[in-house]
Image (tube, rainbow, N blue to C red; front, side, top):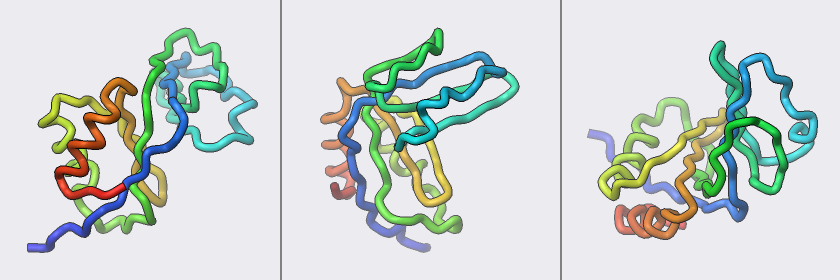
Length: 128
């Protein structure tokens, strides 16, 4: 059996808000020159996750999240990275909002649970 490699995580410094727009909404132009932010559009919605200091008029928003980043570039063949992370946090009753990019994975937890999440992840062998 393959032993998963140890992963390093980084807690991004800013607070984040998760926004829900109507599915045909325009992407706010102010986002395009900023980083980091994440977007997904489906037939049901346009979701945008961005730093809370960026004012968006989405109609529905969930503020007060922090974002953890899996450091480095992940290989597409690596299996179970988010499953292992989310299992650690699920045991602690901490909900996550996950986002993946080509290079790596990100996951958000409520700001009020950030220290608890970090402690649980360190206890499980993750480093920061």
